[in-house]
Length: 162
Image 1: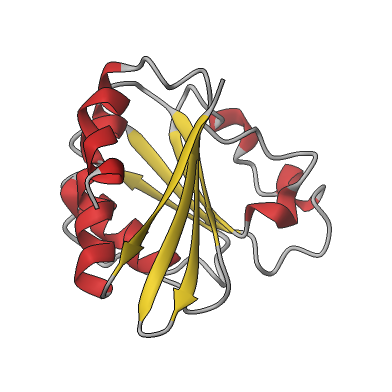
Image 2: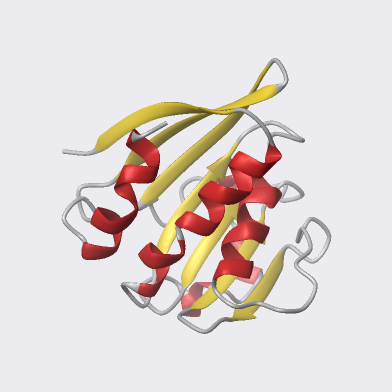
């Protein structure tokens, strides 16, 4: 059974803090799938950037809107940051050459996962960000495969304490 909930992120600093807090989850296993949903400007890239920084990425962390995929070598697992906004068909994922590095070979942070429906692997962690006035609302769910994972158990309190 999946676990789900919601919390309010009052500002971008809270979104960044949550992103950074996810680093122990990614360090706990070699790969997995995080779906980042939400409208433009909801904070998907902000959260991803903070997570990648917490994993030791030093250089520029940009939105992969035009490149579609940005690979990152971290001080933990390999991470692929995908932005599927520009995909016209889910089958275009095959042409990106990333499916060879599908979980468990790497962690995927996928913005606009609905654009890859039917081809994209299922989410281990689904994060949906939405505008709530000046704040952001986060609706989240964790797949059954992750609920007993030691990494999830370390970060779960970040989702419940707010």
